Image (cartoon, rainbow, N blue to C red; front, side):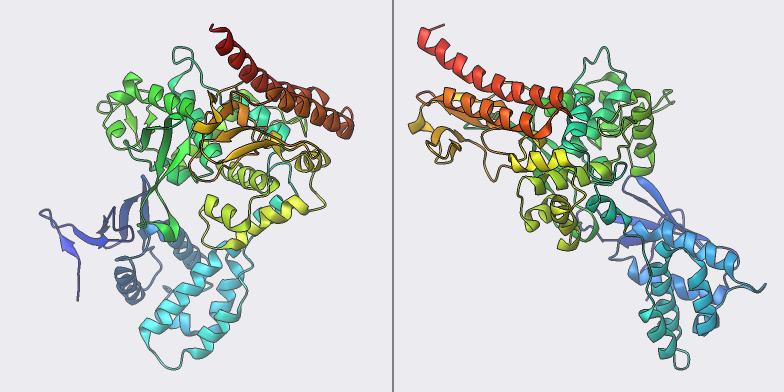
Length: 501
């Protein structure tokens, strides 16, 4: 039964319900299928050089498949079909019976790139099973046993702390964060503002570029809680999790303010794209109609590269410009979570991976012999530098009896002391105590001995100084100074309260 839908212009469509919350229509044309997916156009083309009967067979397969599967494979399948037509060593069109010839199938398998082989294996199975000609088992059994040899270099990059593609070191991450600080709207070009925001959100939430580009216009939420106003973003799920429901993820309130400032810019506030997605991209030259357009990975990634090239951010590890991508930021965040002792299933959940296999690379990276020596010291001291906040004391002063039962200790073995409590709902991803004094959720106790925290910080600073020698002396001392400044801020606020200032 042909379940295509025909509009008033006579154009044919298939309803795709891969994401039930956001169904789309795939336009069916004789030579190509097309659909708007993840804010970009996906095209499945039937190239010249394919036999007409083969095209008809494949169209039947894809019509059934596309009712409930993602159109994300359109572009890759189109490229594969074009490559097969180009790589065949005969002049006639590629036909159904060619997929029943094991020698030809093996020849094409050897010629195509490794990343295309899983798609090719599926294509062979589709053609052979749909055609139902003769005994196809010898072809299918053989192709199922072939190893695709897909590139898993990203895992090696993570394990080896690759200087270009693996995790950023703590020092590199702190340098990079400086470039992500909010700027004055009057002094920051709109093109720079939106790229910086995408990078900030990517580093905060560790989401993929396509997910960030699809965030809806109402994705930002603020709520009042016992610790004041909190902010969160609703980020779409992708891959096998699409349609499972979007979820809100906490973000710093200053990031929420940064997002609001961008959306209030005239070109964004007055655009149709701004009513559909959270962070549309501005046109360089204002078009006749809209002033902005919806982002996508192919549109956003070149802008990120340009933004980085103009800033020429130098790595403290290599002395060369840092190579930053959203993927590398995900590697960085996951590796630093592992350094702080996060469990495998937690890292898997943070990255929204279907399998724990990928998350295991980050756990292993922390124990690998390639772990840089300065990161080993950081790990032994609790991983505090990988999650230090940028400001001084940001919490609240409260009485201990008014706080939730989630105490924060000074981990002094001889005389541990409770100095406050955590007001965050759910689990906290950062190191306790060292990150607390600059965290908005920290509830510092009025009657606590905060000087004890300051003494402990100074003690740990001495341990770090002895461990690192002169390698990153100025950087580490600056980090400890910022921790200490947060503690002093709490001490000073309590003193002002007592004086009645």
